[in-house]
Image (cartoon, rainbow, N blue to C red; front, side):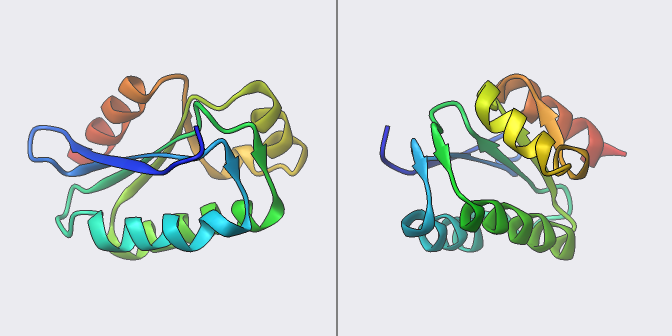
Length: 121
C-alpha cells in the first residue's frame, strides 16, 4: 500500500494510529510528520502508534523521521509504540541497535493497549 492513513482510537480518541506506506522513504517523511503534528491529540494521555504492517522499504531518512517523532512525542508527553514490524525492518532496526530505543508491539491492537496502559500510570 503506497498511501498514508490515520485514525484516532481509544476511549477518549487519544491514540493516533498511523498506517505507514509500503515504501517509507524521503517522499513520505514530510506527510508523516505533518499528519502527526496535525492529528496527535493534545491531551495528557495521548499516544502515537506507527503501523509498519505494509512497510517493505525504509531508508535512513525515514529512520531519522521516526526518531524525530519519538522526540516530538516525548516533548508532548505522549507515548510512541511501533507495531507490526516486518522481519526485515525489525532486523534493520536491530542491526542499528535502535530496537532498544522503541516500544515495539506485535500487533496494532496490542500497541494500543500498551500505549493506553503506559499512559494510565
